[in-house]
Length: 127
View 1 (cartoon, rainbow, N blue to C red):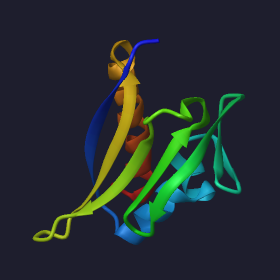
View 2 (tube, helix red, strand yellow):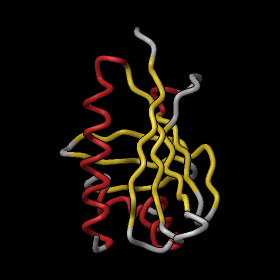
View 3 (cartoon, rainbow, N blue to C red):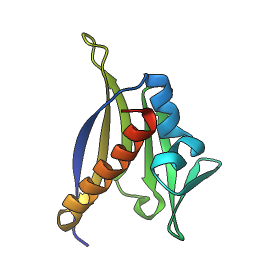
């Protein structure tokens, strides 16, 4: 198996940190833009897409700041995906920083996936 590489993407989001955090951390918020449906059992998020499902364990979260999850298939590895809210101290503008890992031959596809999904999130938030 080839090694996964870390990448970060930054998206400007027109939203308050509180509203954005709800969209990235709750089943109802995530099911509006990230997956077709999302359930949580204890600390495991279950994501449903087109008849398939994937599970991710909650590693850490801090209200209005970030959420970090790890796909169950990556357990025991240092791979995770994180959505972190960054507020510019001068403009008070809100950005969403996505950190994820992908194998070299899947990097572009994974980045396009995030760009597409964050595009849906922006539409839901009105911009």
